[in-house]
Image (cartoon, rainbow, N blue to C red):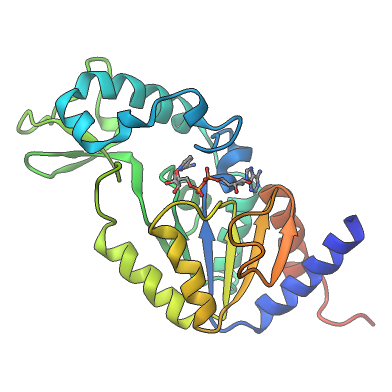
Length: 256
Ligand code: NAD
């Protein structure tokens, strides 16, 4: 198994070196090694919390109740997390000209904290809060969560985390960036995503239809693996991406 992974890492590195446009498409799995659990699965957040707290209508009708749970999930887990080796490897790939774009379903800000700049957040960002009355956006650190629900310092409107709740549309900018990436990428590098979340899960198959090769990193097979994946790198994102980064940046192109 180990030898196969090493062989596949070399193959992935070769594909990435030859690509003119590479997109990384990341999901909750890339942040698991940073201490943030995914939503789904045995250890997933939905085994502990009721997802209805993230439904827009529920939030609007019971903001205090929703905010108590949101605070626990997003600001206790997410607030303390730091980028892991996989986030750092992607930032290094971008700096080295080997990664053109990150489309992430994550809302934890860890790609930006790792140093990536070309990041499009499909589902928004939990580290910002938006006023539902005047639409001003505030960094999480500027707003006290001692009294819930938090209110806009300017107009006293209800503040909501600036990520997409169930029942909300995907923002236009990341949607366009994702479709553009799907139309022009030679490689789509999927990391830690089940492919179960609509409509985000439609982007990788579209990239495949448009000729992209799909490299997938995951601890287990996803909805994509047997349908569109060309090269499956099984393992934890941090471990696999560390190997891939080493292969890309330290291994000579040809053996002497
Ligand atoms: P998911 O929760 O449905 O699936 C997570 C995937 O990661 C699974 O395929 C799992 O096998 C894989 N995985 C688990 N540990 C891994 C590891 N160490 N390395 C590599 N892969 C690993 O995630 P999803 O498909 O991204 O959908 C959930 C949605 O919920 C996302 O769209 C996102 O908006 C949101 N979410 C975000 C965060 C975050 O921002 N960190 C966390 C939880 C959920």
